[in-house]
Image (tube, rainbow, N blue to C red; front, side, top):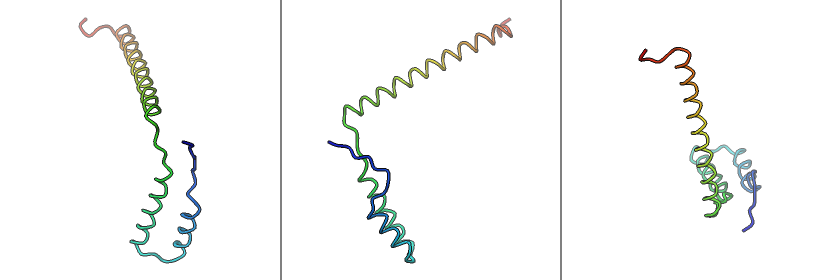
Length: 91
């Protein structure tokens, strides 16, 4: 399945929006235009395959674990430095 990357709204949506912008619209027409534009944009969304989803999930979990280890290590280091500088609470 070929993927199409499009960041710009389709030409027909833009043309309709410009035409309707020139006309004075009531609030319901603006809401309807917004919903049509949202549907047009949602049709461009490509959902990842199962393999891609598992791969992305794995990358995120590994990154989170690495960051947790880094923060834990820094917390332990700074805690040790504070005890070294000021002494333990029990003394």
